[in-house]
Length: 375
Image (cartoon, rainbow, N blue to C red; front, side, top):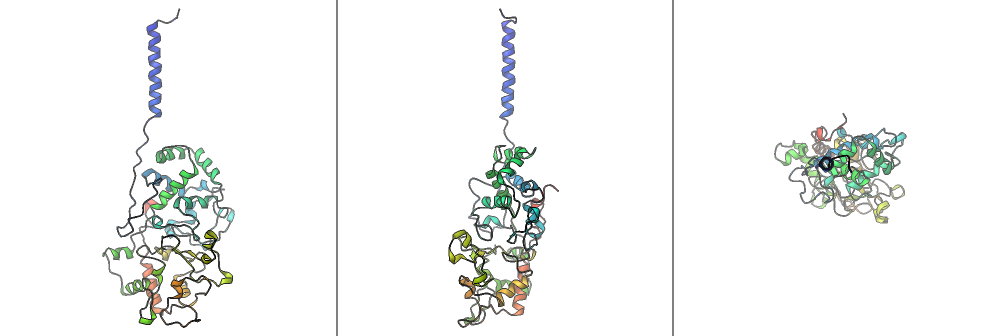
């Protein structure tokens, strides 16, 4: 016979069942609300481009991505983060010809600005990343950059006392993966919208450009036609529209802009496509905040905007894949066999540079939402 009355035993069972139910209730407690958010941008930016359906922007996803962007744990020796080479004050570049990775390793390409990435279809100078999610991971494992195997990066984050809970809030699971790391960082980078420069204020009719800025803008967006005396700087042929960035359709945003002769031509897009006609083609980056992002070109060879204009005006190198948009652009009639030159005047070059300065967005480089969350 039981030592306990039946009613007492039943009571114990009820209590135990209740405790277990409470535990289950705690386990099933709903996650904090993670609101989907809309990307904020000027209404004249394209509206027909959506975030990936499997990685919509969310409040907690963006916040997590911001932390990971500034997280030194994602480098082998814990010395650098994504933000080391992409500094907000420099429009998310680093001011160096080539960036320095862990152990003092020097890279081979200039760090690109990260502004307005939502409207970009290919990433890196050679276009090797087809999505922002893919781009987000590559610098972590790159031996010349952060040099940390992505598997080890995941383990570090999983063992961190804070990150598993943040991943659960953002993605519904505390089991961290490379895929979720890439999605979080990509979400943050999509929010890096630059759209409040003097150029934007002019578009919105809030200001009037100076005479020299106005002339520079007209030259910037005009393809020269010497036969009808139409003068132009030919910039807008590759740096399109309000975004002043490369064409996002297929690989049309990649150009050979005559930096080198055939003997010295870097492979560029050819390394990705395997096509000889793509040799020397590089991504046309956005020119927003260009005054803050020196040095210029994929190899950082030009230190000033004046040097850039001088290249297009006087020093274009002929080669087998030179872009037709450059071959056919001059403010003077060029006979076959003559060097390719724009033939801009000193005043016209000065005007174009004045316009380029109107693309600087002071709010973009000071916005607290883009800043280091650990400071």
